[in-house]
Amino acid sequence: MALIYISYVGFELISNASEEIVNPGKNIPRAILITLGISTIIYIFVVGVMMATVNYTELAQSDIPFIYMADKLFGPWGRWAGITATIMASLSAFSVTLGASARIMYALGRDRHFPSFFCRLHPRFQTPHIALLFCALIVVVFSSTGIVKFVASVSDFGYLMGLGIINFAVIPLHKKMPNLRRPFQVKWFPLVPILGILTTWMFVPALEFHSFVLGGLLTLVGMAIYLVRPVNRDELRELIRDVVQNTVNWVARLRRSRMQVLIISGSRLGQNIANRLLAKEELRVMFRSAEHQVTFIEEDEDLCADLERRYSCPIYHGDSTRRDLLEQVGLDNIDVVIAAFDDDARNVIAALQARQLGLEKVIAIVQESEYTTLLETNDVTAISAPWATAAMVENLLDRPGLAQLYEFGIGAASLLDAAVPENAQVVGKLIRDLEVPEECLIAAIIREGKFVVPRGETQLQEEDRVVFIGPAAVVRKAADMVTKV
Image 1 (tube, rainbow, N blue to C red):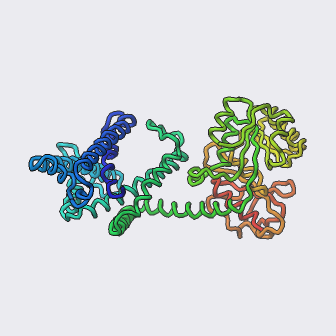
Image 2: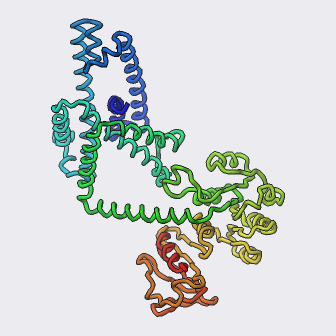
Image 3: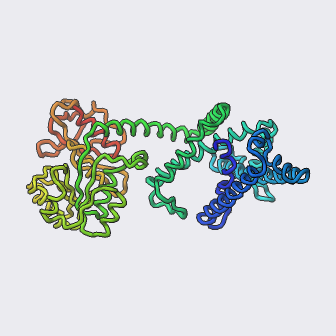
């Protein structure tokens, strides 16, 4: 299976010429699926005829079983017909593969990952002639060796590894670019990409060992070419930093206790909060591992069905302001209640009802400031709706020592308020001695209800509330420094 994989790869090479095809989102998938289906049927019938004509033990002894079968079946003229068909098929595959590989090299040159002369077009035919000649030279060198099995194994190594990476890339792309127009939709996402990864990489160990060596060397050459450009080196360093930071955050999350969260209302705001709590990074999206367990209460029956399909979590259908429905949920197993209606009054009623039932941690989203005093008097955390984001709710759940995280509409800066706990490492230190990240700064200090202008000689004290401003990830890091004991 690993060795003959190359026989099926050519059908998708048409996608490399998508810029020259009319309506590629519709025509390319259709062309690939139709030709793949027809060719697979032809393959099966040809093999069936071969197996029915010549014993498999005889076929196994021949390096050219198709021509051997034609000779057995039709004599000398059948042998030459088989040879002619094989040559025509090889030339056809050569033409398609050469065109596709040259198109890839042209794109690499155009995007400046390869030298720019690869993207030059012929003045008359408007084809990437330099890329075509270079790819043809590579084909001639490999084909002249006569080591067909080794060349096929090396090719399979590249295709199998590349297609596995492409299948994996589909998953984070759906998360990072949810609004990207996708004319061809992947069914049963993310199951199909995961199966694509498994069913390509599972064949790699079956290839020849020499293909691993050559494939590894070619990968190193590709990395060296990629790192020639300074911008790529910076991107790689940033990627490594992100991987390290994500690993540290993932380990920290493992040490953090998970919470049972009841979200009242499955509206847009409630879904945003659930999305934030359930899956944030690509790996967690891929395997749907949740940090918190979410339960919904929703009145709209159609929306309940949609929530159930989307989140696969418990859904209660009914009026959440009713005491008996809240009791049905089983509040003994709920750590946090979040009232996320678009209506302030309903959020207040639901939140106060939850508090009367003994829930200690209740959050309500409100727009009108007059509701804040009522809620806080009853020990309900009120989040102002104009500033309310899923990140703020997550911050309140995961970082109880911090106050609200305000994310400005432009997305360029966030405001984070962190309380200095007792015996914190920063107690008694001057602001100028703190290792505050360069991307953020201390905007204010709230001490005993009074505003203190932060200066270099200002000394931090217990129970100070330090307000940071900057990018969300950076201010969180700064807040962790202040709250560290």
